[in-house]
Image 1 (tube, rainbow, N blue to C red):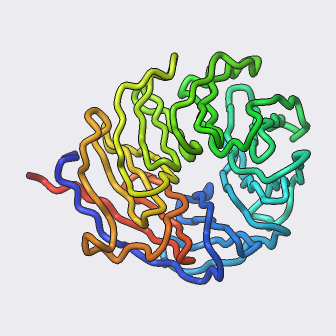
Image 2: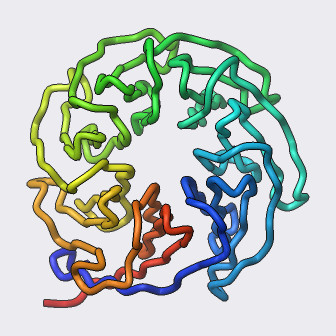
Length: 306
């Protein structure tokens, strides 16, 4: 796979949302994509036909995060109201209606080995539910302020959580005890990803840090975008990561030296988004982006021989 010679093309633009889109998730069927935002509804898209499939369900508030629950057929949705809805897409039915005590849910993560689901948001407390019966198991404080992002280490032994004051908090996943915290960003932490022995962190300060995951020491720091880094993801392409931003672009980088491979934006001639890219997902040879411009874009990656 020739990562130095990537060709990216727009495979499709999905329209139909009436308001900004904040969240996306592939379904258990990889030809189905779910999206949601300010519309107060979760939409299913047919990726084979590149068209609207159905309104999966209506919800009572804006949706900030969507995640398929590993090992189950269920979709988890975190809402501005503090609800966490567990939805059965096949039955178009609500399987469980969970609730935090106050504030919106901005992030959801899973510990499949422990069969646990974590949600966190505006109030700075994390909630842990069982994936077996969706009972609340724990509630613990992470920060005095909003926490917008969670990353789970590949071995599921640690969690990283990023807050509004620019701090990253490291926790043991076994007992949810805090190991350490460090202020890495000057503004809110907006995205986190464990990758290739590093912890990557993006923020509203438009910075991207490559950190030591054990002590949060800074290995590298770059300014990847003009504004907030809303998403970081990786796929099967070895050594590559992608970032998405409020500056309307997404970019592909070599993780080792943080060198830029592709800048996908209107400025570079792509039929990209007109407004902020709020979330992204990289799966195999496709990148999915959602935006304030109310559209979903599906991008196809091809490696070109030198």
